Image (cartoon, rainbow, N blue to C red; front, side):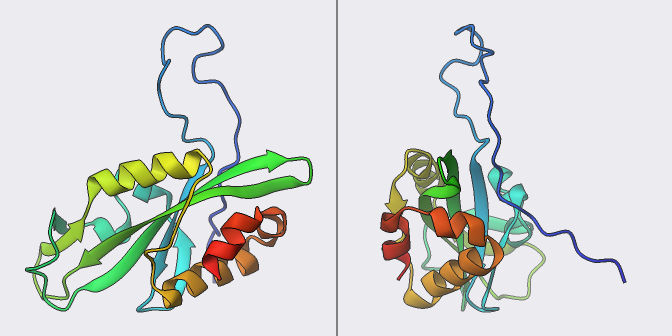
Length: 169
């Protein structure tokens, strides 16, 4: 049986402008960001790079609305934007921003869901700037995320800033 490929965090370096300061100036460099999906129903977390373009498995065949009210028994998910940097001791988690996502459990071809695009854009940007935004996550989801980072990405976790670790406890 073929072994499933394990996704890793992106740790790349590069200047999108090539150093000339013209084309591409003002663009956000997403080289050091990885979306981690936290699924509290299944007690798991995993990296899914398709979430960068709103094409993750949990987002497909979902029509997102800006309010949660009409959803029928929704499943809760979190897309956590994890920014990494490389320091003297090696790579570490620099910032994290969690965003809520809900998908109705209705048996429909296109399911209704809730997602705030401004929240995703802002939290991704803030995580790139080293902010830690997880206080709105439930404790179970924080624990799933922390356990995933500790077990699957121990080198990153060992070098991670105390602010990030404390926020997930």
